[in-house]
Image (spheres, rainbow over the protein chains, first blue to last red):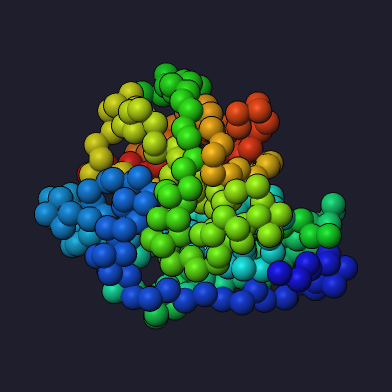
Length: 136
Length: 147
């Protein structure tokens, strides 16, 4: 990928967003196996209901993985200094998640701060994140 | 209420291998079609010695410890009442398939909100590679719902 230069990046620059397919039970089963997060609340609807939930729901880290892809689609991963998120709301089966990002601050050391957001098809915020990226 | 005496407690350290097949499975499960994360030859062309560990996969490797329930057991937390509140990563070096990563977790803080209806456990974990270099620092905030 073409290397981004700190001097060429302005506050307000938007990263190309990503949208997931509708999250299915298969998506959750695959992520359960691949991630090693075997918490049954994400894959076993009987367990989820016994725990007081209406149904299984997505791993927050599945959505954060998509958020991370927005950044690795913009700069090589070795440029990423930090990646943080708050899990604001539960992501449900059937949701289509859009992850977006923009440059909000230019920092010392040729670093920029990005705000990252994951929203469902209604625009409800699921994850509120940020990243620090060091450019050349 | 979670016993506050556990603040500062070091959980058992452990070492996990990074496996290429697992990284490819993770790419598939997270919809990542970027060949750098799937094809070792493409990764090498991009300057990596092997498939890179993607940014959030360190959290997954942390679950590969001998007892994934170590923190829950220590604190007496019920699985069904857990939510992931926050996750933070700080990166110091890339990690790759074939690496052997050592995780050293500790309970950094335990605190309550909403009059004790919610309790929070902040776990901080350092990750070093087989050369002793610091690779990443993870902070996981777990929320425990009471009532």
